[in-house]
Length: 197
Image (cartoon, rainbow, N blue to C red):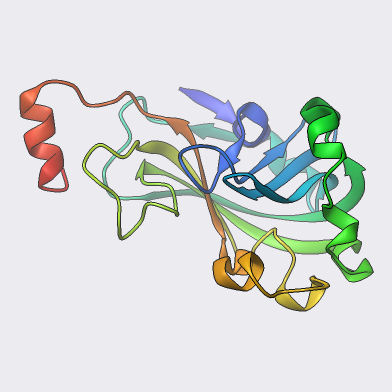
C-alpha cells in the first residue's frame, strides 16, 4: 500500500514499549507530543514543535508491505528539527498537570531546538523495551523509527539524575515502533513463535 512519509510519520504514535507508556507522536500541523513514564512515575509529558530540514521529503511515496518481511527493510532516511516545549499535553488532564514534570525536571538546554537524522524501516519488530527479553507472545510492529540520538534529553539536560532517570537512561532510547501487527493465533503459530518465528 503506497503512502507518503508524512502519512506514515503522523498516522499513529511511535512507542518504545508495547504499553505505549513511552512514546513520540508527530502531528501534521508541525506539533507533537513526547511522553516518558514508567508505571505511575511521569518525567516528561510535553508538546514539541518539529519541522523537516527538507520539506519535500514528507511527500515522497513509500510502499508499505501488507505482510512485512521478518528482516528489516530500509524505507527512507530524513532529517528533522525538534524543539521540546514547556506546554503540557492538554489531553492528559489535571492528574498529570499537578505532577512535577518537564521544565521542573529539565534544564533550559532541553528546550533548545535539536536536529535529528531518522531512519524508517519496515519489518516485524519487537518494541525496544522487549528486545533481548521478549517472549513469543510479545507484540510485533510493522514499522520502526530509529533516531541517531534519542528524542529524550541527554543526561546533562536533567536537573537530577539519581533514581529512575539514571537507572533507565532515557537518553539511550532511540528506537520507536508503530503499526502493531495482528497477533499470531493457533497452536502452530505459537510453536513457531517459541522458536523466534
